[in-house]
Length: 352
Ligand SMILES: *Cc1c(COP(=O)(O)O)cnc(C)c1O
Image 1 (cartoon, protein in one colour):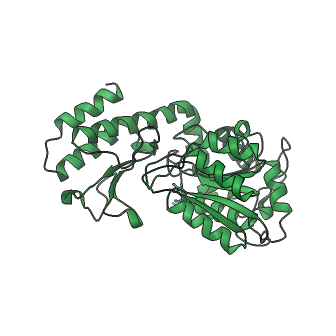
Image 2 (image 1 turned 90 degrees about the horizontal axis):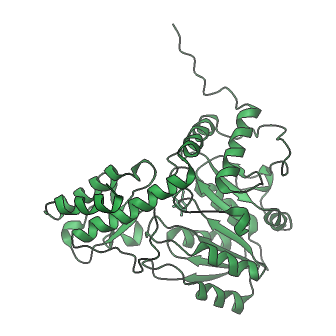
Image 3 (image 1 turned 180 degrees about the vertical axis):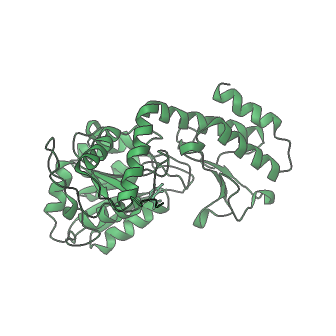
């Protein structure tokens, strides 16, 4: 008796086509996205490498660590990078983006849609609207936003959108995608510094045009991950993307109610800008909340945010009533408090 290992059976053209169409529907775009043979961070680095060049000025919004990293990659490519940065317990005000655009006359603008690390979500539609009014190329890191908040790539007119499946979509982390508009492709093609024959080359991965059937399966796509992504996106379609987003909104609102019932407050200052993926909890000197390791979905702050906040990672399968209840009970236990009242507050907001 032998069990056949099927991981090395190549992806068929029909599977590849299915995956591309699932991604296009997810992103609300008629253009086939580029499938990135690795973690989402690879797609983001590839975008930075592809658009950056000496002589190009790019406004880069920094509202968390991923934005800083993107700026460093842009600088490596030789672009003049104008950083628009805010404290990490805030999101960027649109006026600040507008002022930087007017002052520096950039050719492109980049930002992160939803920040899992800080728990804030940037005003994406407004940012894009201002950038488009100035005819800028726009780049959105929507790795965590996708599935947690609306993202209408073609309607909004975003030129580069990086997405991952391992956050709100409960999918694999070994494969990801970047959606690129025709204007975005022109911006890459007109850049003599854009990588070629490289793992960072988006131009090497350019799919065949809109509407036309793919002619072959790119050989570098990880087979197991591609199949796992098809399953994850099929599950999202059968639940309904709107319902998936709603579940994340419910999780965020009920998590906030739960921590407030414990006498704690969100780390994000403005209650209109919470991300729906994570709820960040201000520690403010409360020693009992200093943890070194995650406990379930309750995690310490990353990097410079360590010791300043706790993060409740209520995304993907954990965007559930049970997930939020357990997280709130975990925090109550850290505080040596009874969790009953806080869990009731969670249930009330969830609607059960
Ligand atoms: C998770 C995340 C990434 C990185 O994706 P990985 O695939 O986990 O490396 C990038 N940007 C944002 C905003 C994220 O939330």
